[in-house]
Amino acid sequence: MVIETRGLNHYFGQQKVVDNLSLKVQKGSIYGFLGPNGAGKTTSIKILLNLLKSQKDTVYLFGKEINSNRIKSLKRLGALVEQPAIYAHLSGKENLINRCILLSINKRKADEMLALVGLTEAADKKAGKYSLGMKQRLGISLALLSDPELLLLDEPTNGLDPNGIIEIRNLMIELASKHGKTILVSSHLLSEIERIATHVGIINKGKLLFQGTITELHDLSKPTIEIEVSDIDRASEFLKSNGFEVNTIEEKKISLMYKSAEESGKINTLLVQNGFTVSSIYQVRKDLEHLFLDITKNN
Image (cartoon, rainbow, N blue to C red; front, side, top):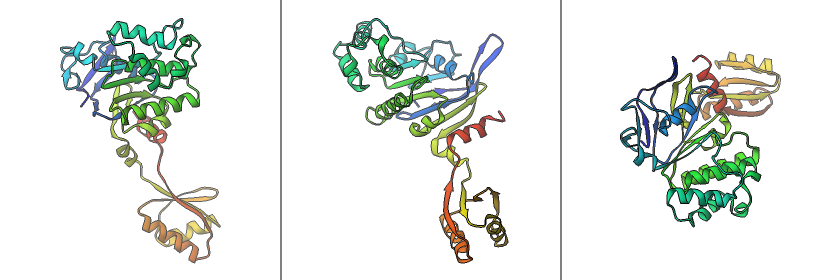
């Protein structure tokens, strides 16, 4: 595990904001860290960065307890928390060179990072004149400057337009697949996480409600068959009389529990052979947004 927390708790005064949190982030994964506003995501990330103190033997990075291995652990990660820390009066390249000097890194690395995040053409433009998407990409390039193994990104697409969101999404996929980075990304844009994450953790009120692969999360949802068919009421009664359990009837379609492709074909054949016109039949699974609501609504 690149990240592991063991029963982590954190309080602000008397308020418990992280409650017995046990994260497990595997090497090479993109871990989507999800939760509503105020769920404890940013606090958890700040604890992982040792910006907030954790109890002994509760937070491990690269298999080492963070409090006793702080410098070695933090050298192996990069982070973008909330807004990127950039100097608006400096160009994008100058921001990177400034960080190279601070980290004693060869200045030529600045050009390499600009190319990686697609900012080569804007290298000499003042960072204050960058679009939001460009600023986020510059922030990620600053986080990547020391070639970290682990990236912690807190709401990296916050405030971006669709093009900016797509840019950051593609960059994260490339960093994980081509450059071997492990990424923990927090977000409230569930559709984006669904496109990029290999693993998901869902947190609410400081508690971890789900943790697993994106496939395991989808498996929590029982798929249905949606059938668009003529004479909806009569078709529904016909299916019931033939032993099928109809879940819902809407204006133009019938919903049944999905069991297998063979059974779906059997239903289609049965309807057509008995005079019904089936205009479409398809399997439906809940998307991440609906699964998230199901998991968090009672917790």
